[in-house]
Length: 480
Image 1 (cartoon, rainbow, N blue to C red):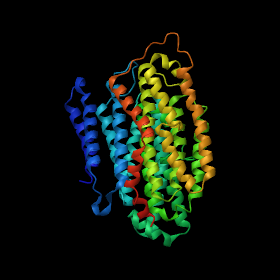
Image 2 (image 1 turned 30 degrees about the vertical axis):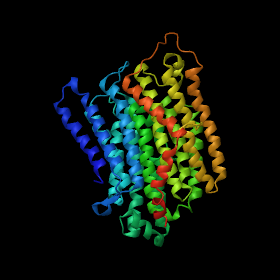
Image 3 (image 1 turned 90 degrees about the vertical axis):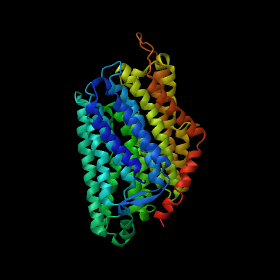
Image 4 (image 1 turned 135 degrees about the vertical axis):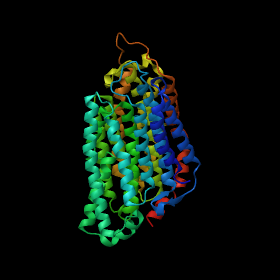
């Protein structure tokens, strides 16, 4: 069944919410286990579902790209649930305020995942927009989940305002497209639009690009990221850092390839300018950050600039490179956030200088965090280097050698600020009262899994060839 993974995610959300009514306080930890089992079932359904086809009159379509996005999104949600369990169950050395309502937390998380999965398979303006809002609105609640924390409330409020603004721009652009073409099917709009180029068309382009840029944290539409990342509960920050990137990339795939595919090559200069400013500003501002979560926010902004390189080459290699780098980014970024969440659970600290001497109090976690940071910087032979190599190759083949040179310089700059964290862990001495910091088994296994992904995807990047083969005809069909 084509829609089985999405239906399993929705069913799991409802089961978790209902079964919580019959659980005592002592057994409510089972809601997390049920959530994990539901996500495993959805992952199994997605992995075994190799059929491509359409449902609901062509409004829901499963193809190679949608299949890969489903896998990536379920993986991100699965790891996030594991990272959330210690905090929600109270298994932390430092008491976390305002993080109750476990069943509701998992339910909201699953519904935002379902919205993201429906988004990439939508082929109609109405289902596309509804899926986007289903993916976005639950994130407002998750960002403000700490009811007793003013920063969390501030993060939720800012996220609501700026996300509502971006959604307004998107729906305005969609309304203009419908007015120009009289169609709601994305592929039909893409075929008819060349006959309606004019002021209204370019205004619709501007609206959709601004909305997509906000979802993907592209400069200058990135203002929400730092405050939301810092104020949200750290497991949600981890999920937001990868899931919002994934849904933003899926949104841009739908808009840039399906609707504006015929103009993508003509607009490559504008894409290159967005890429250059995004990676440069993200890396520059990250240098002066002191809070580790704000630091990762601007790291995420800079990574968005690298992703944009994949749109410069109108061929299937760009799609494959972006999907592969998204997988690399998920395992690498979640690897860093696993260490951040563990350290905050044990110490309550989240400043960069608080990590001093970590190599002495827990050398294994310090090593894994160092490797993940090096991967984000693009150090060979780790997966981040291979992913950036594929993206840089796309830009180079399109003739944007100046942008490749700028991206290489930015990677060097990023190495400097990632080394700030590594310096604290390995060079600065620990506090006089520092003690060995333990780690729970579930976090240790999760970090080991992510660490293996960071290393293996770099040494044996054969998965890229599989993604490339799956998407070989997808883009060629759209840009025919």
